[in-house]
Every structure is written in structure tokens, then in C-alpha cells.
Image 1 (cartoon, helix red, strand yellow):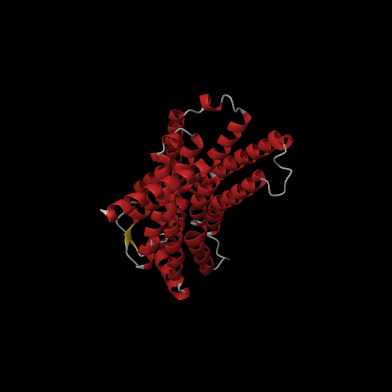
Image 2: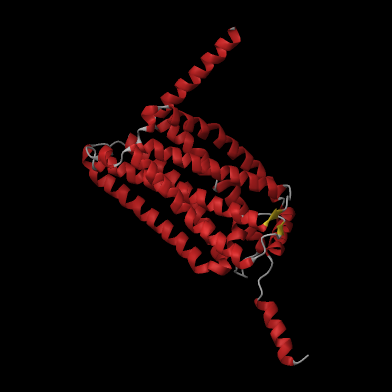
Length: 333
């Protein structure tokens, strides 16, 4: 064999992509070394806490005609639906990874696209809730005419389409280009899946996440600054523990919890190919982000909004009392 042929084989080996099954197998070995499967415990606890509250609020909103006519409650219901979808996907993925249940590459791609869609939909809707609050304060007389419930439903459909169109387009393009949809993976992780896709769509993925995060952040900042400027002369900010200050603080913390996992995940994507960062660090950061940080806003949101919105808390209490009365009557009979 000639020197040119040796050089061609060497360059081909260096430039050929590492099979994703090899990457996931290395990930499994690190998880076993550090016993990271124990993070499935907080995942289950946080998911159960979410499942205890979010469905109750959803039922309260959809059973109450008055709540269904309010744009803010429809937006909240959409956040809760996206959050439930995400926590259930995440729980299924964590359990399958802990049990080492093999998954086909196509199935992992689909889970990745659905997870990104759910996360983006929740973040977009949280942003719309801030915009809705600003519009209600800025134009109180025209607000209901501009954003009736029928238009809100159309906006929510558009949010889901906007959140889904890019991840599913990338998934389909990658599936057609790779042709390894029947490859079995030891674990399915969104970071590895997107990191593998990133090699083929690096610019598009960075632009998508950067533009989405930038637009949402700018909109939220603008609306809150304008809200403060509009309401600062009304005396609602004078008291240190006024309702406006407490509400702004609660929303700020919740927004931080919603956005922080996304920024951390984007940072993981940027650093996934860095050779100077140990693989153990990547596994730790990804595991904590997926099993804890990603779930925290989904746990706090239903309890925060259930307490803050008196109409929702009253409706929940009425439903619980009605259910208790029915159980008492059934027991007495």
C-alpha cells in the first residue's frame, strides 16, 4: 500500500464522526462511576409535586367559564400543559436511562424534538404573559377588544407551531442525512442528541437558541421597564412589601428559573466538543440540569400562580369542596 493510500485512510478515520452509541456508552460508564442514577430520586419527587398541582389548576381553568374568558388564564393553562408534557418526557427518559433500556436513535431524536418544543413553548408563553400584563395596564379600555379569547387560542396554536417547527425540521433533516435510525443507544440524552445533530447544523442551532433567548429577554425587559414607568406615580411601589414588589420579585425568580436551564443547556452545547473540559464535568452538569434545574420552575409555577390568582384559588377550593361533598354523600349512602 502506498504512502498516499495510508494518508487517505488516516485522514478518513480522523474526520469520520464517532458513532453516537460509543458516546452514550462512555456517558453510561461515567454515570455508573459517580452513581448519578441516584438523581432519579429528586426527578421523581419534583415530577410528582408538579403532577399534584398542575392538573388541578388546569381542570379549574377549563371547568370555569369565567376563567376561560381571561387571556392570562389561558396563557397560564398553556404553560402548565407544556410543563406537564416536559416533565413526563423527562421522567420517562430518566427512568429508561436508569434501567439502561436501549432506545433507537430515531426514538431519541423524537424525544429530543418534543422536549425542545415543550421547553420553548413554555418560555414563549411566559414571555407572552409579561406582554399580556403590560398590554392590560397600558391599554385597559381596549385590552379585551384587542385580545379576545378566540384570538388567544389562535396565538397559542401559533406558539406551539413556532416552538415545534425548527426542532422537527432539524430532526427530519438529520434523519435523512444520517441513515442510522435503527442504531440502539444505551441512554437517550437531549444534550448528546443535539450535540450529535449540531455537527451537521451548528450555525442553525446556535442562531435558533440565541435569537429566541434574545427576543424573549428584550421583550420581558422592555415590558417590565415600561410597567414600572407607567405605575410609579400610582403609589404601589412605596411600601417595601407592597403587592407590586412581591409580585415582581416572584415573577422575576420564576423567569430566572425558566430561562436559566436553557442558558446552561446552550453553554453545554458550546462546550461539548472542548477537549480541555473533562467528560465527568459535562456529565455532572448535564445530569443536575436535567434532573433538578429543568424541573424547578415546573414545580413552583402552579403553586405560585395558584396562590397569586385569587380566582384560581377560589375555583380550586370550590372544586375540592364539591368533590368532598360527593364523597361524603356516597359514603353516607
